[in-house]
Image (cartoon, rainbow, N blue to C red; front, side):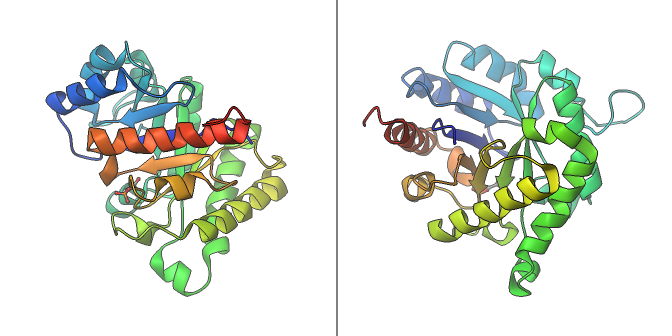
Length: 258
Ligand code: PGA
């Protein structure tokens, strides 16, 4: 697995230009060699481009349209995001699936549009509390991955996946690191079986109540390629601590030493 762990922040419907400025100030002294991106609301993207361009911190978006262009009021295309220097775009985050009725099929189409525009989609998958209670986690993940494999074919190898147990998001209760490892291993097996992608081809992030205190233990897990961080990505000091933890793991894994 690539030892460089990836940190993606999801600001959701939060943030401001002054907040971005405080991130830019801290990011100037960021750990090298370990990619990190902040996915901000659309109106903040031009400011992100201006303020972060000279720092190692990348910027991204939280959604994109499943369409290329045309009569889709309120939608934003992946190509428009690419023009604003966006590198990563989150698709299928559970709040969009729940509040906007996004289906597995639509999420897969969004990922395809993002890839076509040269962006890296961070595709969120995960089980609901009901599915977990019914011991249907693997089944739910399989359903979501099958749709991605069907729509994307070999291109599935170019996405980043984020495993986010829906019940863990914003709850303060991250999944235990050992269980994260186990579930990531299940996802890797499903990718190998249904998409012919060998383990390690698709980076699998973990998301759901990651914070500055638990990041090190989660990022230390072999199967975890990085983290998708919501609430804790809003405070520059917390985000930087998580980024530092990721950089530290990267060095440990590649044997360069801390
Ligand atoms: P959280 O959000 O870190 O606040 O749980 C994660 C996410 O929704 O991506």
